[in-house]
Length: 115
Image 1 (cartoon, rainbow, N blue to C red):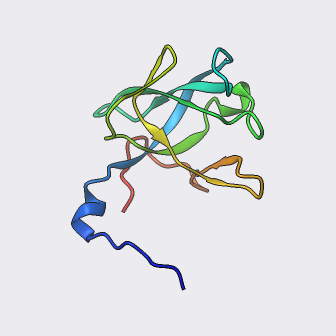
Image 2 (image 1 turned 180 degrees about the vertical axis):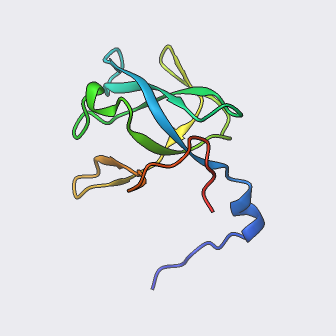
C-alpha cells in the first residue's frame, strides 16, 4: 500500500484553480522541448494571463483558440526560456505521459473558481 500525504481543506483552499478561455496560442520551438504559448482570459477580475505548456501531441494552436481550460492562477510566475509563465494549466498524463488538458464539458463563465 502506498503512503499518502494528506493536506488540510485550508491548504487546498489556498490553491486558486480557475477556468479560462484560450484567446491566443502559438508554438514556441526555441526550447529543448517545444511548447505552445497561450494567452488565457480569466474574466474581468483576473484578466488575461500567459502560460507555456508542452501540448503538441494532442493540440494544434488553432484548436486551442476558444478552448476552456483549468489552471492554477496563484503560483509564482516561472521563467521558461524567454517566456514568463503566469499560470499552470492542468492536465493528466496519457499512457505515454503526454499531457491531456482538463476542460469542462459545458461552457462556464471565465474566472469561475473550482470548488
